[in-house]
Length: 231
Image 1: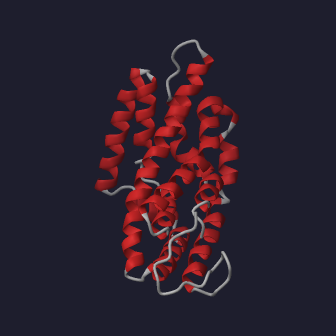
Image 2: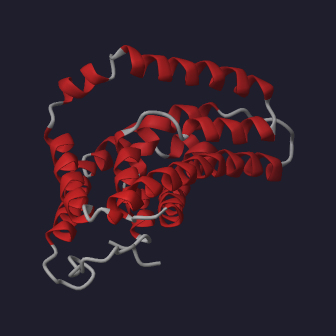
Image 3: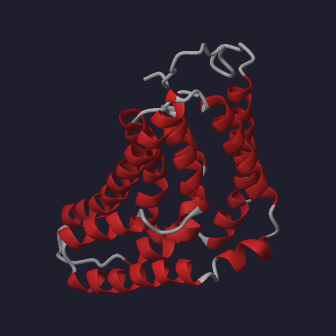
């Protein structure tokens, strides 16, 4: 799996972002009369998200490099594919229970408090910081991206993968923050039905890669040496 697939994963799953982070994007303050300043603020908000994703990608990519060194990258790829499939098949009520864990609630509460404080400041720097914090929100879709970053087997590839992942989410999130109501709830609900299908496709790709079948690009034959993702 090429690191450029990070952009595809982000693009096709970005409607999920609207459901999770849409309320934050819609709540971003408007200040000043300049249209340019408004657009700049929305760009900075999304840039903040991408920076956080890139840092996470570097950290988890570094972890993945250790996996590669001990020769477990194929097993890890199959494991990630299986975990994604398990997540898709997990009943919604179970996922809701997970969100009720005290640790999960503490993270969300901390972020919400800081979001409120930063939104009231009405400055471009606060919008960028909101984006940085937004990237830390617990999100199953981001975890899928992190799984891809780990499988890149290096901190630089991992950072690049998650930067592209963030760029993939940029168009729909930027449109939501600027046009808001154009992307209505019913449209988001319909497209969100595709998310499980896309997650299954990604899971199958992870599993095929780990099976080492010798299929170019899809399941390349890996040698015993450390293999990093192509750039």
